[in-house]
Length: 483
Image 1: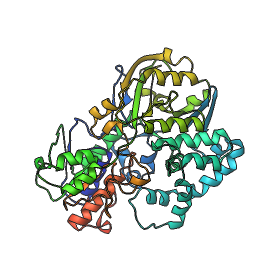
Image 2: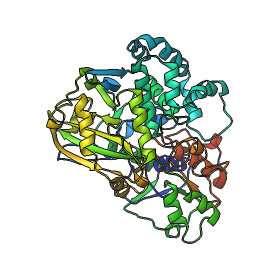
Image 3: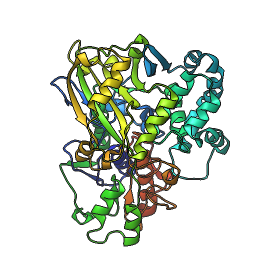
Image 4: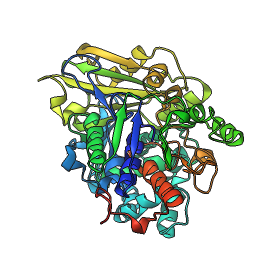
């Protein structure tokens, strides 16, 4: 196996749990891919380099079954999962409690409850359906109920469903995690999924940082017998030791680079991989702060995640800009303030925070002033607290992790044209024309996010196709091979 991101680790665990010998190679000195932490600014300030808040991990049909707490993982929950900064001194909250969230939406409370209560009641089968490749649904009516709303553009859906700016902005800000224009079909889906996740499992953070999550995954897979070699930069599939199957936790661009020497994949398939589309990028700042962010609405300080977004129309304009090759003057920001619930990640009395906005793929400009001015509007005095900052635009993100092509943190755009056909249209999207080569990165279904399901499904495909092992023959997740 090549690549020890969350999907690579998940796949390795599934294969080892089936009784196979697994060698996992990783170019960096640490496993986890974007799931890592570091002192990016000052000594004693521990930041998450990429992913930080993990609603999909705790809702994942696979990851939530693993005994990761036995391997050192501890989840911490902020008082409020999410605050949306609607205007200076004015925010709206997404609580873990669906009912409390609805009460805060006033006239839209009933509409919010009627949307989410039926989904919350059957969230487990719903997530199993959604976090799988294209298939014949086991729960068709449940999936249809979700899909009739999810397939719509977020802007149109929210304007039709809600009357108040609070409800439209709250769910619209979550929909913007899709990294799609909010007027694009299916952009509502991510907003529905992630806000539902808050109401069933919360939006937790790993105590001590995302690197602790990766360390727990590493401990789990090694307990199953997986051998991991870090610092191994693989330039060609020819460099790999003999094996019956190879799984690649890589996006199409890296797969082409490794497979073309030696002709491991046919030219036609490689050309299809080369046509794979990457999406808008992230531009991220991390801060070491002299104190908590001074939000003008004190309620905002209760949240682990803050959307600095303004109204729905403001976010629509901001999220459309990258697809025109532009950056909004008032960008929608995804911001996290981990030390509101995990104070040990900074020295006593100090804090950390990060924020990113969406920019054109490969963007090379400087947005520090624009991002900090945007936060300052909702938190006057913020800039006075900045002790140090780390800046990572798309070029720096890709240099750190080649899977983040052009700064795309989702493994490729997830629009309707590429949602279920990633990376190319195949009955089994994890397989390739080479019977022993499989793909398991977020460029396969169900796409981006720390849920491990791309690796889980790819490993099951390899077990079935190469080793003749089917689901009924497997031990429960987290355990070794049966017998």
